[in-house]
Image (cartoon, rainbow, N blue to C red; front, side, top):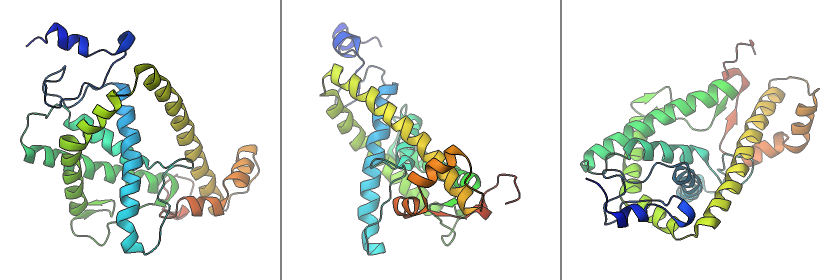
Length: 252
């Protein structure tokens, strides 16, 4: 039904700035959704999941590795985009399932997360020869890119995220004054965009160097100086690059 005038007014911050509109004890502006699907909300979900996923993976992996490894996914900042993009995809896919049964949320998150890792793993390997993870030794795996077990982990993580963490995060975000949120979003979004572009170019130049290509262009020289093999290996400690795995159609 139609929201009351009070609730419609609540949906806008100072000077009309959108707020998070998360369902936490009250009906959301759009009943049936967990969160209003705005660029602002989805961007901060990306940031929170990128940082949070990096921290959790680092802590969980330490007992297995026995050493602390840099698990960042971009050349600058404590960000792991695999978790950021995964968090956004899960949020968007499950956003209209607020009133669905728990098993439905779990299954949807498992499918989305499993498919996302499949596509992401295939992309990194085909584009840059990068192997960032492998489930080749796990049962019910698909090309080593994903497997049933990790899909179930995504299902559990997605359920916890949608039911508990997401509402809490959005409530905290709503406490930040609107003008400050707008400025912070603009600055951080610009930084992340540059970070992503530079990272992809650094991966490409790293690939070309390992493939034996000569460093003879200004771009290649710049990245060879500022993002050399030592930097890339130290920054992306859990990634391995094999030019022979890439499918670029150049017979490398």
